[in-house]
Length: 418
Image (cartoon, rainbow, N blue to C red; front, side):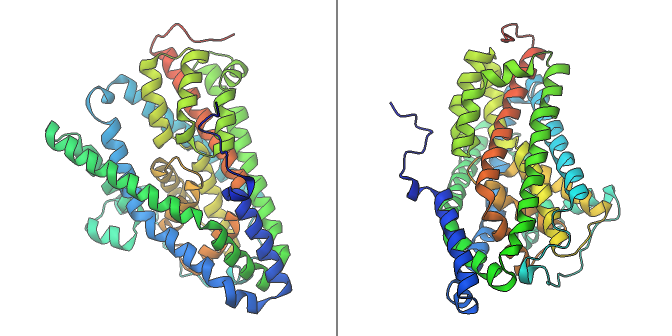
């Protein structure tokens, strides 16, 4: 019987191969035809980026409200819930800091030539002067205006408040509103999935424009950017998580990784932590030895809110964009990036390329807007598939480590360490 999580479509119908073909076609059109090709297909890239921006606010809002309402009710707010939230925040924050250090040290976007994006004049970036101002800015004086203007820090804060407030309503009203927000979130995920299916057309338009204006040498910086993300994910997977397993969980990381190997392969092949969840649950319970009580709470929550790889990717991606545009982000701006990347990763859906949609949340939090930002993100999309596979593996692995560590501290004696 074919595993339902494995893509059985012919290779030419798979999205990542279609994006690869669009990238090759865009390079050929841009280098051989030039401006006429930009006129013919460039508009598709513009429309694709506008569609991505269209879904950001409703997707983030419904995702966070439904997620907080689902995990914040009843006994979920007890000791197990607090431990789970604490673990997820710590590991996501560690991943973001790893990416932040690497992207500043390597500087993949410094001096990069990505055509018109490199020569853009972006409005002056307004950044808070201290940490307190960041948290003040998060509180909207007018939530409707924050939603309309896409003030993402304010939108995220308001969504968290709404989600927590829902859990305090009487049961009948709570259930009715929770189901409504869950249905709206599912609707937005369907719309987002449909937009992502248009990615090959968007990549064709964006790559054609990039190559026509700056040549194929523009892909050099993208390679360095990709290596920066891979290095960050490698440090998180090979250093940070093993240290947590060894010191906090008192277990052998090699044994845990081997026990979770089936789920990690599934994550790599599907690029979806949600699609991998059934396999992750089975591996955690049958091979690692986590109880059903702990696994059924920690892992579904992790597939929703714990996105270490996505958080690292968003942080590196936003600073790469600022470097390409020639805007140095000072400490307060980078602190805003860290906080927003953490919150945006919580709101990221567990579907392929969700991090690509969320990156606009972080760019707009520091005032990086305009068509040039969309052009750079489109170029990043051309190499996003392998990075998406690797960051999904990181997301799922972090979830499983959290389940094992929390199980140990819940006093479960059945953890497999051999």
